[in-house]
Image 1 (cartoon, rainbow, N blue to C red):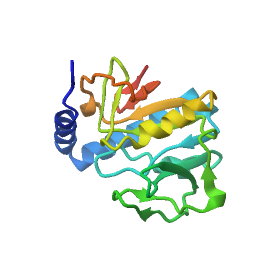
Image 2 (cartoon, rainbow, N blue to C red):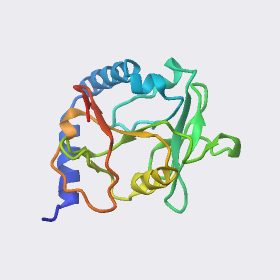
Image 3 (cartoon, rainbow, N blue to C red):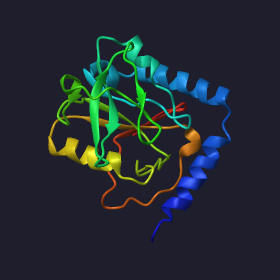
Image 4 (tube, rainbow, N blue to C red):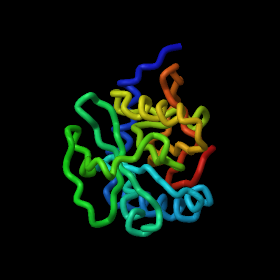
Length: 189
């Protein structure tokens, strides 16, 4: 049984496009509340998150809400590899190669794959049953999360998306499964 990933991506993007900016903002606010109320989040010291694209839930305000946590955002390197750098509310993000707002890659802000307790992972689509994630097709996160798993430390991968992004996906061997999913409707997994 094979899966047409490009078709699934188009389907998810169409569903996201059908959400108004107000709906996305309300859903994002609800997700931030759910994160703040979560024991998983409360116990995590170092959290890898992301600067949201217009199609993604915006968890950005959490960085300012929880300054006691270590926050890091990804940067896509020339080799298409992700690296994570700490961010603070007053840091200026700059637009990276993929149109994503990225942190300044200062060596002293680099966080190793062994650092995170919790990784909030954006995606194009998610499967509610298998917790499989559909990314943008470049494998950035699958490769990075594989490095994190090699560290053999307790870490939780949370797929973050709107409930409109739930689709049926066939997990492929290189796909890293999420431990939990978060939408405006709550937690799964």
